[in-house]
Length: 93
Image 1 (cartoon, rainbow, N blue to C red):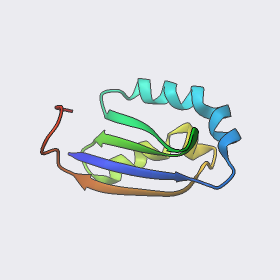
Image 2 (cartoon, rainbow, N blue to C red):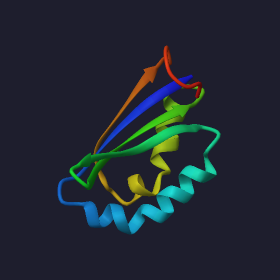
Image 3 (tube, helix red, strand yellow):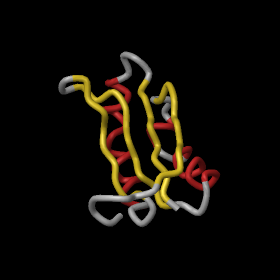
């Protein structure tokens, strides 16, 4: 089942995001079979959050995976919202 994760950074935490980015990208690569799509929200050129589309058994599994993300472990996010999602148009995920 697909889930969308909307993760918003704490204000003024771009340095934390940048210092943990390599670990975050390695984590996403390690879990590429479940992380179908992802990228940052931007304020101009500054990343201020993330959007991920996950393929997980259920919401609990999606939240557990998100909890292992180095960004989450570093305390980057002010909020994480997870919603079930259904692809209707666009590329297959």
